[in-house]
Image 1: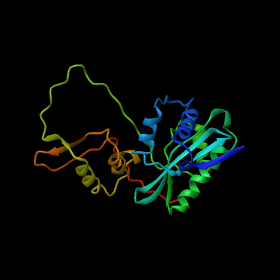
Image 2 (image 1 turned 180 degrees about the horizontal axis):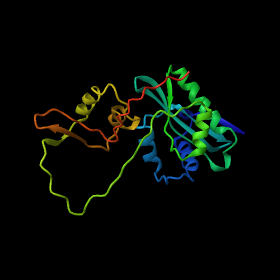
Image 3 (image 1 turned 180 degrees about the vertical axis):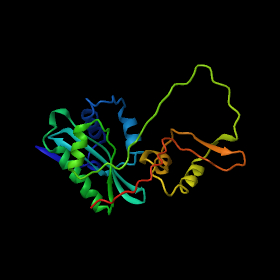
Image 4 (image 1 turned 90 degrees about the vertical axis):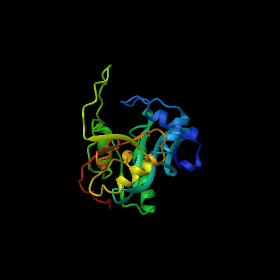
Length: 226
């Protein structure tokens, strides 16, 4: 018999077991231990145990949805931090039940929208979310590159690069009123993270032209959920 429990009523061990099993065949290999999982997903990712749910088959964790609430793009937002089902239990409606619990929790918290990210080539997941009423709003693009073994000589420039504090970043963020910044690149994320250093780009006259990692300057408006 499948039962559903709020995550503040279960152990972190059970939560991590469901996460590990649900992502055991994921297209991107996830390697983390329980402590790192808890520190990230219930830290800067913004999920909370009272907004998250676990699916159990007797005493076996078999499904998980993580949720967190904060202001995002001007709306009080319930974000799905992860949704996963053990491979042997997929296709049984467990995802739909977890998503319904997630939505009702957002409604109870007076949220104005639901939010999540999904890999566009994960067609099964995309179809599931579309059936639940989700619509694509933004496309996230990630870039990588390689550094030469011998650093190139620094070009002459009218800009200065220097380390700044989180308060500097947060103050600059408030000036960006007409752009969308990804959940994990916004200041509430970095406020609870200890893994980043912040750099500012300044003109020689000290006017700040600050960049934050993965800044997305798409200004498409959002539509609140019904």
